[in-house]
Amino acid sequence: MEKRSRLSTSDAQLALRDARRLLAPRIAQHDRRAFLTRTLSLGGLALLSGCEITSQAGVEQALSAVSRFNDQVQGWLFDPNALAPTYPASMITRPFPFNAYYGVDDAPRWTKRTTGSRSPAGWPTAGRGAWPTCGP
Amino acid sequence: MSPIHPAWVRASHGLNAVAVLVMVASGWRIYNASPLFGFAFPEAITLGGWLAGALQWHFAAMWLLAANGLAYLALNLATGRLFRRFLPLSPRGVLRDMAAALRGRLAHDDPRRYNQVQRLAYLFVMLDVALLVVSGLVLWKSVQFDMLRELMGGYEAARRVHFAAMAALVGFVAVHLVMVALVPRTLRTMIRGS
Image (cartoon, rainbow over all chains, first blue to last red):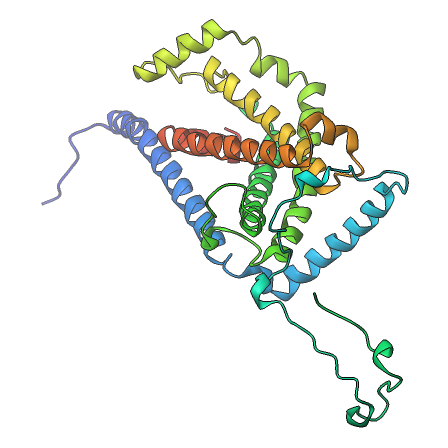
């Protein structure tokens, strides 16, 4: 036995239109939600992949390129007549801040060896004055 | 219907977000190399790895921040959007909208109209970024920008100004993100325009 719709064709079309009207906002809502989730997960992915980005070759190249550009700008900005301000000796920080990537206690200390007989071939042997001095 | 945010606003907002993220994260690493106060930022949330790397990031993203900021201001002025969207602004209006917001009664029915608190916040952050750029110029080339340096009260004072302006910017971003989470459609309008 065939099961027939109790609605006439025009009624069915009206019912369908009503149903679509009711569902449309929900679909739009779903779209928005999907849009948000997708955007947010894309952002999260970008952050995750951001670990250790400096060490990637392309990034390093780009940063060096900008750095060279900055050198040019700094050269262009440079005014040989502009002087740094001077401060009274009372403003000196004590102990003087040691500016390096290692601590002041780890600073290398150089010792000079100037005995001619122990110098490798080709090194200056003309006495103490010929050696470069480094360190504190 | 025209988009709520024109394409140039959306593009400049996106670029600015990237620039601010890089500037703040690398700036924290630079701060850690010589902390002004008795704390350092956790290394995990900084960018650059070490001082020189962070400086490279900072001095690269500064061009994006400045160029994008200038383009934004120029277009905002040229199109009159600055005056349409952010003005008029009155202390009384701010207090009224703030009170309404705290009681949960601030209407968000028209996304084309900023309430007084939004206007204040957005104008504030524009000025704050301008202050960051100016104090940053002093820190970058303090000898060459000697007039700016004296206006800031010297190099050390400029460091404090730069830090305080950063803190204010980060505070704005935190509130901004909470607001976007509360009214998610604002994120959609800032990305898609409608």
